[in-house]
Length: 466
Image 1 (cartoon, helix red, strand yellow):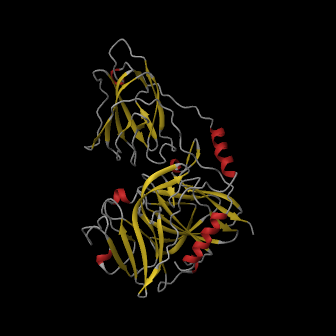
Image 2: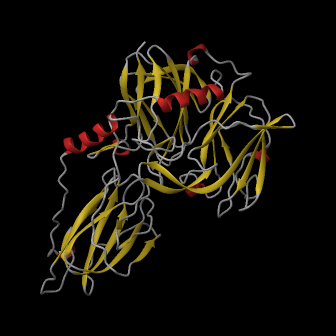
Image 3: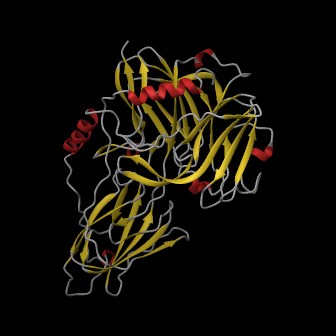
């Protein structure tokens, strides 16, 4: 799209950083109090057909069947006698889950439909907490407790024998009190401060008249929300990687240095290029870029619009870990329709997985607000780099959908909730009519809100009065 250049975007984003936002606050990670035991734990991931056998008694203890869903932990029993305990875990959700008991152990990461066994050894009487350690999932509700009682005089058995009954242990939460805490904390100041910010425009170096973008793929510790720090695989140490912005028909170079512990590559998602060797899929169009190597891509974009770049080597892990970014091509030969006219713009890269639910690499309350003037028109470039769909919803305003996957629509249409599947890009224009702070979030509500408040894929649309 042709309008704001990289300098304008940087200035607008710096202005956004200084803006004070009065809006609902985000959820903080749940702290779990548990008893640390010196026990031996083993994790077994049953990669087979994902089936799960019925609970069966074991010689000296109990087997507990646990179902993981989006986003809930459901055991077939939550109270059982002291002794040896095994957890038979099945992921019945649509995204990766795991189960952890702090100080005791955790299951392997389980993909949808897969099962695993976690042997907890011999447990003493007491109350224990379990949760899904995948970023953002505990905040979304994947927590719980179980109770180990004094050993019975008879032989312990599982619930499948009918001698144990499920007695769910639920933490009583005063939702109003919990929400008030996070709201008051947020209203006291701007969005929560975290280390690092991704997605800012990267200025190219000019070499022999050709713009050159220098990227380094490396592992860093990335703070998604206050105190939520995870290992991330990044371009230039940030998630998402720097925004690369070029002109339609302009020849550029992207020089990638690989400082990762394994091979990688870059694919230019949605970009039409004539040279097949530049497409970035290992063993299809190029050899992997091995650790320590540097590789140069030479690109001449044929089509303009909103596109992405990401790894295409072990992409199922490298992309969710952070090897992704926005690639924007300003139109030069393609005519920009009048309905695409706008004053400011914002790119929103959506992601989920090991780093949790995020917008531009951050989860609420660390997400950045979108600042607009009353009567102004804002272009939003949605880019879904995640593993699942995200329906984005703006309160109080309508979004005019003007382009999909970099192509202008023949007839734009209005929406307040827009379904964005993995790999898709949508461009929308919003006319900010009503002053105030308006919620802007994914409408899969477990991605944005829980009984402990807002989290993950939530930000605010702040309309400043004339």
